[in-house]
Amino acid sequence: MTATAEVPLVVDLDGTLTPTDTLLESLIKLVKQSPLNLVWIAWWLLKGRARFKESVAQKVEISAAHLPYRQALVDYLIQQKSAGRRVILATAAHRSIAEAVSEHLGLFDAVLATEHDNNLKSASKLKAIRAKVGNEFAYAGDCAADLPIWNAATAAILVCVSPTTASRLNASVPIERSFPEESGGIAVWLRALRVHQWSKNLLLFVPLLTAFSFFDAGKLFSVLVGFIAFSLAASATYIANDLLDLENDRAHPRKRSRPFASASLPITHGLIVASLALTIAAALALMVSPGFAQLLLLYLVITSAYSWFLKEYVIIDVIVLSLLYTLRILAGSVASGIPISSWLLAFSVFIFLSLALVKRCAELMTLGELGKDATQGRDYRVTDLSVIWPLGVGAALCSVVIFGLFISDGATRARYATPDLLWLVAVGLIYWLTRLLIKTSRGEMNDDPIVYAVKDFGSRVTVLGLITLMLTAHFLTLGG
Image 1 (cartoon, rainbow, N blue to C red):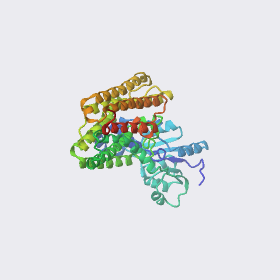
Image 2: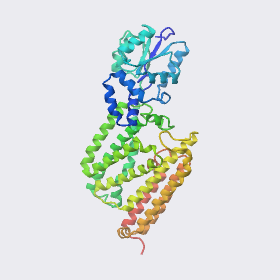
Image 3: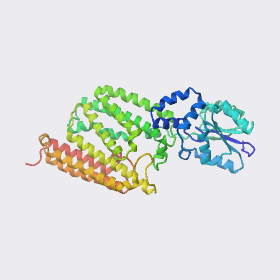
Image 4: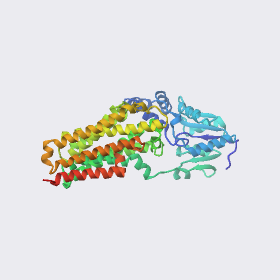
């Protein structure tokens, strides 16, 4: 069917104009304000769907400017609007959200939405549409709930509709346009789970390395199971963090393309996968030992606190990140049954504090290049670089000094065949840390420093060389 100016075009919002669910986003934002709001949510549900949405809308505001939109559909609406066609937004979302979207896009001649006791969905929406434009209209929707409206419409516009739903559409209703779903498949989920970030959990193997017990099959297996448990738990927290930080991510130049921020993946799918990952992680942790499970729980508590509020405080966020890295080494110690020295713990706190500060420097440099003054959702300003840079350098040098004290310790000299060879490791650390700082100053640090080190050829060679030197110092007696 060819669209004409005489047939109004009615457009749904959630899942159609925007691929996200504004009600779910509102609930997540509400819970982010305070987990105690879960009690209010349960109470509001008893009032009915319309009153529930109104209560939520009174507490939180969704930024229409930061919502992801289906650009192909928006372009089509602009084309139809330019041709003189009436375009109307009809949604089950609360009127405050619908009005904000209408004002932002500047496309709609009228807005029909949920308000007071009228939840504008399915039959109620059809009744409101007929009251506004009559019986002749084209409707753009996305799911089975839209079938009563499609079947009553003059024409249907299908937006990312499943084959099952499409097959239920009345054959007498002509399809004006169809916008197929763009699926990223497994690649999108790998990004959402941040599988590349699992490299951080290799820190669990550090006690095995420092104790030179990597040939002990039993210990190696326990740490491997622990690595999988931590990785799955980390992925669950990444998903939770992304869902809690949707609006801030959408305002970020790089993070806006994340799967949940861009709505490439539905929020409901994220909640399901995160829950499943946590369940498997808990089972694997208990398989290792109750003590390891307790450390994993502590990791989740600290990570959750970081996601909820700690990341909003300047410097506290980087300290927490350095402690989370150190916690991984402690977890590896518990999993393998190998005690770790206070030297290693102190070294890890400072080196990871340095790397966390490097990450903040990289983010602030990017913002500065874009002409922005401060981060969104974090208490950092571009002018803070004058303090964070030297602090990062100082933390890096502190880690090297601690490593030097470790070399001079009597226990170290008794344990290594050629302990003085470890000074070359100290020199290598200075080179590697300085190289990361220089890469950051050049604007080449576009990822977490640990992840960057895994991807970067120069870093891989350097770290491999340092490990080789440590092994040589332990096993081989050199010189007189």
